[in-house]
Image (cartoon, one colour):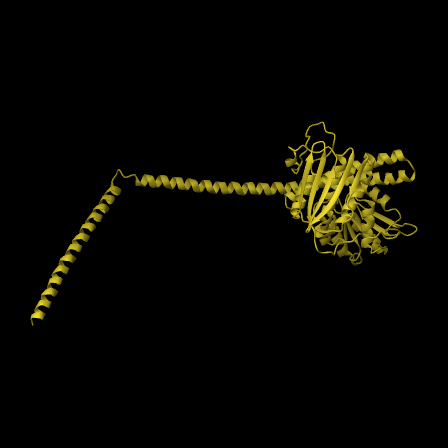
Length: 465
């Protein structure tokens, strides 16, 4: 009984203590609430005060943010405008280059074509003096053509508007062919071209581009060397092919070497210069090789000569194009168009005359200067059941039809022409032009200026001779 009494007292005591603890806590929280309420009241009072600058600060920040947004929008618009102008400028540059190429190649076709015909005639007549004159015309025309090709190619690479056909290439064949092109010039200057011949490597590259690069480098070496030699050596380090073209020429100042791969740069930019050149061959080689994952570098010392180093990658693919054996010519050495009936669509009078001279031996050469004239003439020929063996079609024609539209019209109008060979012959020579014309339905493509050997090869191909 006493125990129960003491327990009750203890419980009552704890209850009283708990009550006082709760009341104390409540008082503490009430004090905190009063402090917070006072702070809130002061803030409200400050906000409602006429001296409060919150709204002014807000307006100021709002104006600043709005100004930033407008500036950002203006910057974006300016960037879009600049980008559009750049795209338009690139487009107009490509149009300009295409037109310039066309306007220069057309007269060059006449100049080089007739110069080569004159060379042949003068050689047969043993007129060495006139042969030399015509050869000088031909060389000057080829130099102009090379500069034009380099300008177009480097512009196409910079605009990323060019693609390369990477295939296994016979390096020995390409190097030997390039050397042959400069043996006579080197011999006339008293320079010896020495080359390794004990190698047989296959490299993955665009054959035509690599050939042109090697031609350009050898051309530079021969041109800038007045005595001594040009040595070409090839080495292979675990699949890394290195071609070194070393000459004993004038060399390059070491301060200029970092700029040698910049387009249009020349060591001597003044009026007095002994050596010609537009300063494009090495920059073009650098850009083209880099796109093909290869490289080119240069070592030189003024007065001692220059070494150009080309790095290529060997390919294990041995399915390379082997040098084609020359087909034995018949005793009469007839051209592939011998006794053939040819339709030539060409508006340029000089080029018409040139083709007349080139296509000697054909049975009939029918010449038309426009699409409308061609359609009228073919209407007569079809009625007379006159057979055409192949068509040489210029692309840039006056009137309603260009060469592409005219070819499509002819094939649609007369079924007998669906299987006739159509050869595009044009002064348009930008990158990928051949693929473009083949895709349109042409059987082959010739770029002006046209050489007789190229014309013979193409005609043989389309006629399956």
